[in-house]
Structure formats: structure tokens, C-alpha cells
Image (tube, rainbow, N blue to C red):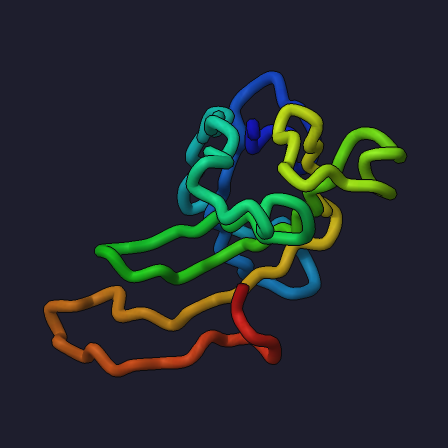
Length: 139
């Protein structure tokens, strides 16, 4: 799966910006602190031999995570539905999964974002166990 396909294909790098908002009413006071270009992230599809056969067809999740010093602080989850590309196979699935006929549908317009509080200054040795900052269970 190419992560470009989660939303749409992009021809050039993505630009991530860190912006300090100087005024809620007027963006001319905003300050661009940093800008970073990140190229497309391409990944191989999952290896079906590492998935239990009963879990190949159905709903799963694709996770994009970011960590700092081994501490995950953000997770973006996309629901994925794996099903046969043929109506007859969907209605009467074979006993053995035909992986070459499975298609992946990523629900790209409804990502679930979970933020985790982390210790960005481990030298202060404040390693308390904290819960995610969402009202839902993390993906």
C-alpha cells in the first residue's frame, strides 16, 4: 500500500509547518517557526502469510504513528475493509482465502487521531504513565 493512496496521489513533497499564532483575529501576526518537506512514504502491502486466515477478510486498521525518543505522541488510524473484488466471491467466499482477489478499501476521509502526552525532556526524569488525550479508546 502506498501511503499516498490514503488520501490522494501527490506529485511532490508534503510541507509541514510549525506556526506560532500571534493573534486569534488576524493571521498576519502568525510566525512561521519552521517548515519541513517530507517526501511520499511508500510501503509494501501487508504479508498475508503473517495474518491469520480468518482475519484477512474484514475490517482492520492502518496506523501512522510518530514518536520522540521512543515515546509515541500521535497516532492516526484509518479503518480498512478487506474484501473480495468480485460480488460472487463476496456472497459465496471460498474455504481458502484467495489473497490475489482481495481488495483494500481505506476509509481515508475519517481518520481517528489520538494524542499521547509524553516527556519531551527526559533529562527531567518525569516518566509518569499517562492516558491518551481523546474521549475514545485509541486505535
